[in-house]
Length: 177
Image 1 (cartoon, rainbow, N blue to C red):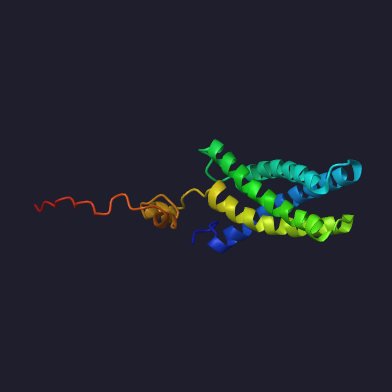
Image 2: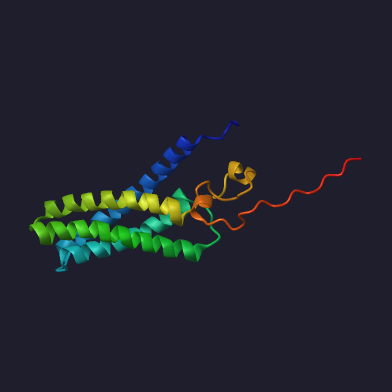
């Protein structure tokens, strides 16, 4: 390894740490907005929480794009944002579905119970978001190893796509002098 280069586990640890830092900010925003709405408005608990989650999603996109994944492919921002919003929506449903089940399924609606189930929902949704954002939204640029292999795409990609040219290309003829 060259000086300054890092192994895959160190890169993943750095990515998890950056993702976590942005996530902490988003979680603080999410809790602050939801608790303010719960205590200062007459909105239903889940509806207020959906608003808080949307505000946190907006904050998180900025953090992920410009901090956590700033070195990732930036060529297709519209597609990136669309995928981010789609996966964020799934995370929103996970988080708020758990809160909905606690309140309307079990009647656990005190301020403490809401926050406990909000933590549980955010935790499960965060695992989903980490996987989906790094796999589909903020795609890594090809590494030198992938470029050297000649594919220019992540190792798993060839298995996900059907073979375009099933037959090998003909070899050039060699001339002996």
